[in-house]
Length: 469
Ligand code: NAD
Image (cartoon, rainbow, N blue to C red; front, side, top):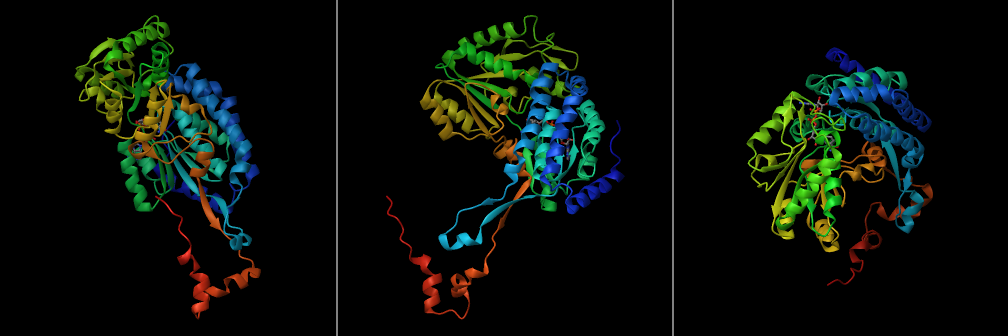
């Protein structure tokens, strides 16, 4: 399918803005219908989408159903069920004399929004923000990644058959097409380099933005936790989408004395998951593009660390799951987010060193720790910061509809998933409604000011301040 002609983009934007002004997307029943239509689009075309994901990423049907299409059907239906509650105005507490003025937060849709999606989980990361935008009562332009081109084409074909085109449109293309739309409030999922470019555009238009970015998510493995289970959980999740997942475990930190036990448990898990080796397994997605493959091969070739599992490559889209030990902080594998099937193990001499290693780097999207020691858990909560902190598993946090998902600092800002995406696309508008009967309480604010009025209006100057030590 060809790109959306750039000359058509202003027309698309104007159509959506006009629909928003007319109030098309406001009624809650209409929003619920669109959300359920989104679920129907996915359910009635499940194999069209699964096939497209397979063509783009070699994604196994299991992962397409379990981690993308199924999740989005469930979240669309769930959002339709809960949107009445989310959209209700909230009356907030106030001082006794203010209560009759009904201080209220109204949930206002922010307008027409732009969703810029990445290639790695193309369906989930395009539709999750979209369903939040629908629930919030916004119009939306969706820009799927040009790199996952089969999914993008399938979405562009199916979406208009289910959703109202006066409110929701798919734009196909890359940088020029996206740039044309950057004056809309947007929701970007992708990498920090492009996020910096589009943040500049947002500043020019004073446009609010949400950035869902990536980075290196570390895993701490403490000897107090069963090493066989830790190895299975790490390796199982590491290979989701061929390691091309924003919250993939990027590297492992382990006490030096425990490294060999971990390596041996990882080798056992590898043999169990991929008896014929990971290169020939059909339970693994491939590397998305030859460019990404070359970047990973460059890291592999420059690495000075010892390979303990894997290390081979085939063609320009396949690399074996590869585990490295004794990785030094300056090794090529530690340069940036790996986003592929490599798992470096960094040995440390103490928990203090492990915590400092994490603190010395950017706040990650996720911090994982396998430990049964409550003191270590508490230290990690108190002494580090990350989008999510997960004990004794990896990636599992994505399955919770009611936990916010997002990064902090270089891993992004803004949050998503279910109500959190609704909130992202809603403006919390403050409101009060002052009855005329309140006039006697307000009389003291009018000029001319005098001592008696000062006593009333300035009384807070004299409120008692509680003792503290
Ligand atoms: P990508 O190359 O597909 O780019 C993402 C989007 O940006 C695409 O739609 C692309 O067309 C658009 N784009 C590219 N250049 C642009 C420009 N100059 N102006 C405007 N738009 C532009 O995907 P990617 O960035 O390589 O994705 C991988 C990254 O995304 C990783 O860092 C990963 O961690 C991160 N990620 C984060 C999350 C999250 O939810 N936090 C989820 C998935 C991926």
